[in-house]
Image (cartoon, rainbow, N blue to C red):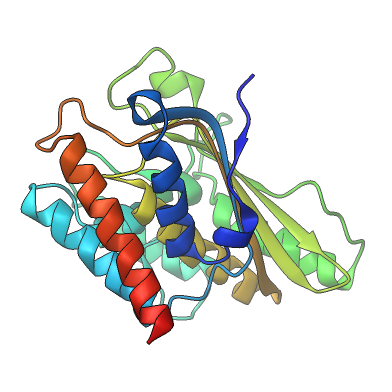
Amino acid sequence: MYFNPMDVTLTRTPVSAWVQTAKVLLDAPDFHLGGVVVHIEQPTIINQQEMAVINRVDEFLRHHNQYPVSTVANTIFPEILDHGDGAKALAARYMKNFLRMPKKGWGRYFERFVSWPNPKGGEAINQLAVVVEMLSEARTGTFHTEKYELVVSDPARRMRNVQGRNCLSLIELKPEKATNQLHIYATYRNNHYVRKTLGNILGLVDLQAFIAREAGFGVGTLTLHSTSGTLETSGVPWGKSDLRALVTQCEGLLIRRQAA
């Protein structure tokens, strides 16, 4: 069993968490570790130095004809469609756009959150709306801490798939009564730290903030558990030296701007 927790003193914010974990992966055999656990204490903090890193990673991805950071984040939470009118309205707006998308392709996490096939037939299950409702009820009724989750992995869809299979498996939401905060735990079977993970983290932050707002909680911590974490060097248009340069540049942006 692998267990590779990152140093929590170095992963307090979303982008610093990405940089720190990428540094650790650079020193791992084949740029890969199992059981990578990243705990982010302040997920909503994205300041100038954090934005500089996001822009650098985005520039790197676009240069190599990969999905930009924002596209990856939008697969988890389409922030531009959030008009502040609740989970059901957001879901309706998203599905209207979703029905116009190509049926084959990548990036369907939010669709699973708001339109899970109903095994009993009839209307699809809007997990997001139900979770918001349950968490809202907890604040005025019996306070439970262990029954809120968004399921992604579905054995009826792609259980045997290797390619095209979802990397995100499950999101657990944990309300804390004493602080009125909502914590989030995301489990990934695999995280591609170059192409996807920074976008994944930012999408999770947006999702967490939305649910907390709608249910009446403050934003708590975010914990990311990747049973496999990799800085990709196979099947991609860059090499190990490119990744070392990218991570070094990103670390330098954080250090220089923090010192300024």
